[in-house]
Image (cartoon, rainbow, N blue to C red):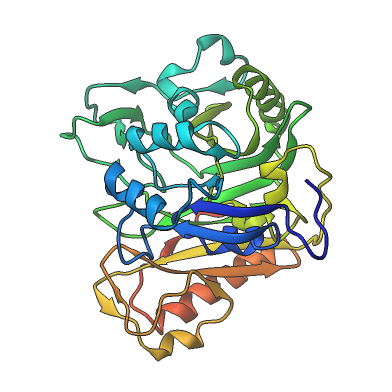
Length: 360
């Protein structure tokens, strides 16, 4: 479909995303009506059960309106809702029911692991050198030291900085959006690996070519389409693959500020992607250190998104808001990240962010 000044490409879209604002803002250019489900900001959890989701669909007449689905997060482990959506809606990107096949590293065929590409050892039994991970987690939740859950597996701990590469997959060669470094929350004993942000980096590493080649291989193998990101570490001269995210993910926040029409390319891969800025970008997610009630002081924090309402109660360990940060080079970006975090911590009771950084 072609856009015009008078008619948008889509009438109705349902966005399912934790931290939905950045996606919704971009979708507003393409769709007349946007519905969203965000368990972090909604008063009611519409993804709590299939019946809850069906009630939301029926109350908004989404089936009758031929609504399209844009998915980022929130349906982890909810196979009944995934199947219902697949059977009743058109979904942009990878089919929801294929996520497990692609993202479950246990199922990666060994023939795909060649050269410098490796997957950390995975086991069903606890080892002191391992991290526990949930099969249905996202954002670093349920990653750490939970050794009793039946939904847990154990992955060998790999030290060092965590990186990610994001790209648009299509029938042709993947379009590489960029590399970034991931950050986690500092000193959170319950969620020690909670995702707290990322910054764009140049990544002038000798391993870069191996990763780019591997992306072409898995794109073809899994028929990937749309926005994809892969988290990895560099250890013992290997690229250790930690996660494959076959969906919109939080790194989208970086690249929608760098490229034009990014959400349109996720929905219909293959369109031209033009650069709108050569700056470097970062985002930092602030989490509540204790329960607190949002007051007007929050308005003094600059350039934010996913902002809570005055009077809203934020529970301990839940996200408060996102800091949006930019600079003209990588070094200045890192300095600005530190300044913004320190400034925010003077205003609200939030965790600090673990900034492991190395300039390339």
